[in-house]
Image 1 (cartoon, rainbow, N blue to C red):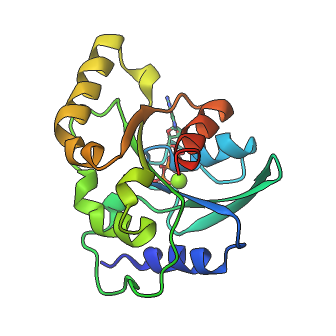
Image 2 (cartoon, rainbow, N blue to C red; image 1 turned 90 degrees about the vertical axis):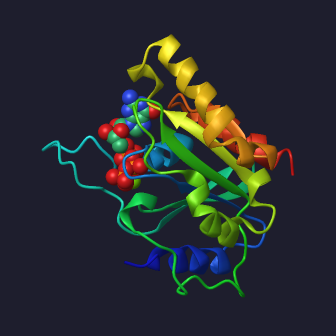
Length: 196
Ligand SMILES: Nc1nc2c(ncn2[C@@H]2O[C@H](COP(=O)(O)OP(=O)(O)OP(=O)(O)O)[C@@H](O)[C@H]2O)c(=O)[nH]1
Ligand SMILES: [Mg+2]
């Protein structure tokens, strides 16, 4: 298996309007990437669950980009297939000519009782998409908070901060949570945009 879709992200980056801010959604299958973009644009543009037949199959299987204008500023959201759907990054990643995204958002379901995919395993992809300073452009946002009680949420959040994400956080990555609303989606995007 190969990360063919990374090339498609790079094609979107190359073709983007000059001043547009590119925001790439990353994360394991079903972490809520398409829902995040739909929330941000206030429209159910991207297909996302729950599927009528309760299908367990991943919905987003290729790169999709969505343009959006807000306060006269241009944004391009890029939806991606689940990082856990493929095994290893290959030479297909075009390192040399890549333009970089402004914001990388990695979603993690706080409802998961185990973490089997570690975001740092994908640092090559983060770096190709966000450049050498990718850590400071990255927000790890937890989703599905309503599915866990407050104590569980706090304990899992502490483990993410202190163990799993400690290197990324030391490099400037923010750990946050996404409640599902439009305001919250933009709060997360603006956090990175306004810090640059
Ligand atoms: N409770 C809760 N459900 C959510 C949240 N975000 C997404 N969902 C639900 O979780 C499921 C997956 O959401 P998607 O937005 O399709 O996730 P995805 O990462 O795009 O998934 P794939 O494209 O299939 O890999 C859907 O049933 C959503 O309605 C959230 O923050 N809380
Ligand atoms: Mg999706």
